[in-house]
Length: 326
Image 1: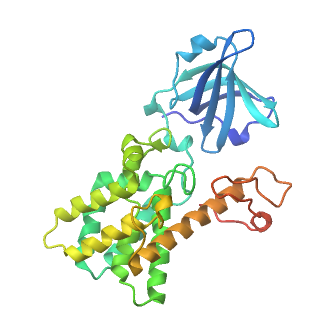
Image 2: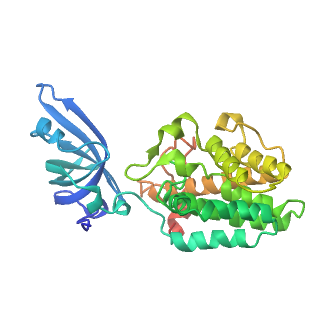
Image 3: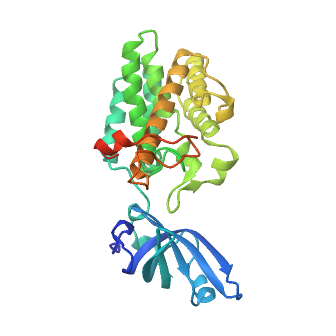
């Protein structure tokens, strides 16, 4: 496995560039004179940059495709107040010679430690039916491996490798505290719903190279897939209570809260209501924090307008506060 030479955060205007990047966008264009050139978007775990291939574009186009990790030679220039790489040579690198974590952002927390903590919630359960169901999920090596690596989303919150596990653990911690405050809640059902609410995302996303939706993710979506996965596991268990299965499935089906946000059902139980609001809060908190941290204008107390959140964010305190790493 090759060691990545230089990260984008360390490249400055005028630097000679000899390093590897993930190609997240690639398209051929033509100059006013009719000469072909390539527009690229190159990425590593520290950021993204535009790339241009002006010379031998048609020939170099044949060497790589979108989603490849490539070795790039070129020079960094400044164009319209942003860094850009003028590429003189480029070639694909075999995947087995690369480490995906060099090219996609990853959680800053230890996945194994997070997974161990999450399984601790399962071990504490008094409801043996829910406990056995969760163990059936996560004692499967393939499922556990995907769960540790998957992002929680493609473009809103926890959009990095390990993001799904980090989000799920955060939600589960908050649900435990909420159950202590509201004794009317069925704490085991609440925790099980929190752990499984996004389980379908291990199949909704493809994240081995570029984080993008799988065909199944686009056509069906993680909510329905999650219920299908739970139904399949329940069918393998003896005497799983039908009412318990119904309420667990409802938590998954309603966790987006409203029809307009892709929820097939709105919450109709106390546990479903709480999972929805805790999930939404954790997702939005991460989205706020990430956008504030990555805001490009360091001279303003406000972020640029965020189209997903439909607002500007006041980041003065974020600049003054040392937000802990993810």
